[in-house]
Image (cartoon, rainbow, N blue to C red):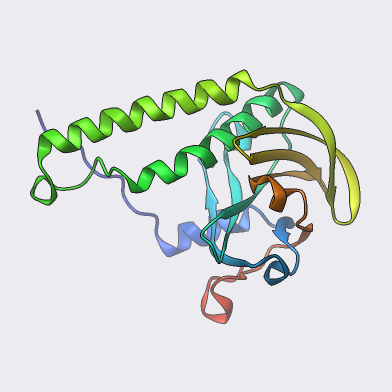
Length: 206
């Protein structure tokens, strides 16, 4: 069987064009150092030509000094009411699954580990993922309040194992905030015109 071809990496121009589609405001944590957060990732995720426009998002990922992660995703277009619960559950599941990624790398070359051990680890990983998704699906979502830009908004959220994911309207878009419950409940999320916070003057101009 022929080897699968790897996807062609995006060019710098394509990356800038994807950011340009988010022209307007995007979410961020206001004064992240107050909460011991450091911005570690800033990118557009998802597929731009998908039938579901909520798949394309602007992500800002923050990490605490102890290694916990808080993510603020801005949806280019708000979700429909029927989509919101699935989005919240997927965000919570993703946050809970993330630590498992460090335990197994299915793409690791055979010389790095015994193939049988890799296969067993990968199956354990898949089983753990399915268990987490099932656990999140069993927990009811809640409709509560969440502050964006200093204004309390009606949101949907779910909390599992002290990890919370929140979907909230934000300007003419929406944000999904995911992380440890105590941080999600306390951080100040704001929207500002899109700009490069992580790479400074050397990064792309949005």
